[in-house]
Length: 368
Image (cartoon, rainbow, N blue to C red):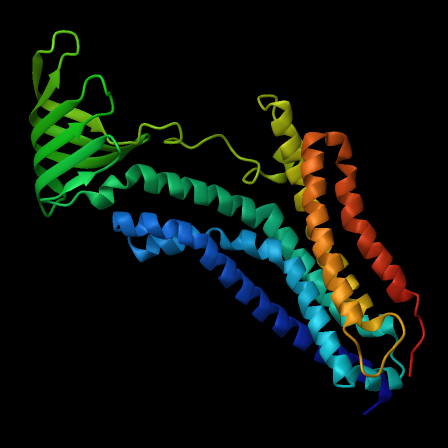
């Protein structure tokens, strides 16, 4: 085999190992995070008898944010592991003996990190905001349409903390017969509603019951007398009477990038600062995939070469990346309080990678 083709075959060999490990580690960590985060949704699914599909769809909308968050860290973990293993197996020794420099050996890892960075930008700028918006809307839909899942014949169903519904029979066309409703949303004037038939529907504000041929019984709080009102047709809303029963205004996590960079005048000063910080975070977070990868490469390739490897430099790299992750969170919090500190987000993101690149490229020649 011609000697000029060896580096390209080596590149493919390293890239294949890095890519496979990156996919496996990322999927494993995403599954672990998904499991821990989804536990808070299990209770509502079990308590209200919702289908597993609702649970999967609701929690699945959070997965893109998990991937975007951990991908830079998994890049570092994979590079550190693969290159440390190659050093322990003497593969790096052989590659250096054929004339490959540290910069040349680092090229496959940098290529994988650039691919991860592009994927993070796609997630941060498009997929994750859309997924967060869909998650909130779906959560609202479940909360305000849960009556559609719960109304079962012969069962007293607590639709919310203030409304209890009893349906004697439910026809094949979903019409309800012989309905009893206890409505305590007004604590000063609780009401009991009876209806011969009814139909469950959904309007812009949530689920409603279309009642026919019934009566409404209510104690007058002033006189203490029973008021009886009969009706041939009545509409009763079952939407939760709470401040979050309707979708709130767009959150920073759901807003597109151009809206984050130009927050509206209706926001408070603190909210505008949070939106600007979120914009900078989306633009800088993917860059950490390359920065962390370079730190891992310096730990495994840089410095004095030791045939039998070592654990001091990889352990130091792990500590450094852990510190940088914590530092990034701290800088974001400071910038949210004082927007003049926004440039620190870029400094904290770029400087470690530039220093690591300088240390890596300082060794320009091959080492045997």
